[in-house]
Image (cartoon, rainbow, N blue to C red):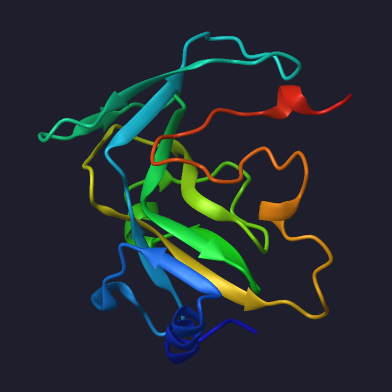
Length: 178
C-alpha cells in the first residue's frame, strides 16, 4: 500500500513525515516531486576500491546548467531535506527524467524508517544531457510499515548516512567489516 496525497499531508501534520521546503503543487496523488540541489560531485580517482575511502570533488551547477556525459558517474543531492519516522520512503525517477535518459539511482532507491537528511542521487545518463539546479528530478513515495520498528535508522549505531547534508555524500562501504 502506498500513501495517498491526503495521507502524506496528514503524516506531515503529525510530524511523522517532513519535507523541507514543501510546495503543495509538487504533491501528486501518491507521491511528492523532489528537485535537484545545486551541488554535484564526482569521484577523484577513476578506479574505486570498496575497502578504501574514495574521495569526491564537489562543484556547483552553474546557472547555465551542466552537461552530464555518458560513461561518467555523478553524485547529486535533492534540494529537499526529508524525515520519515513511520514509513518506508522510496525515491524513484520521474518519467520525464527517465525519458531524457537520466538514471537517478544505481541501486539505492529505498530509504529506511528514521532516515533524516537530503537524498544523495547516483546519476548516470544514456546521452549527453544538460541539467539544472532546481529541476524536478524524482519522486518520493511512502509505504506503511507492518509491525513495530525496534531501532529506527536515525537511532542505529553506525548509521553511515544519517543526517546527510545538502551536498552529495560518497560511498561509506569502507566502514563495513568484510
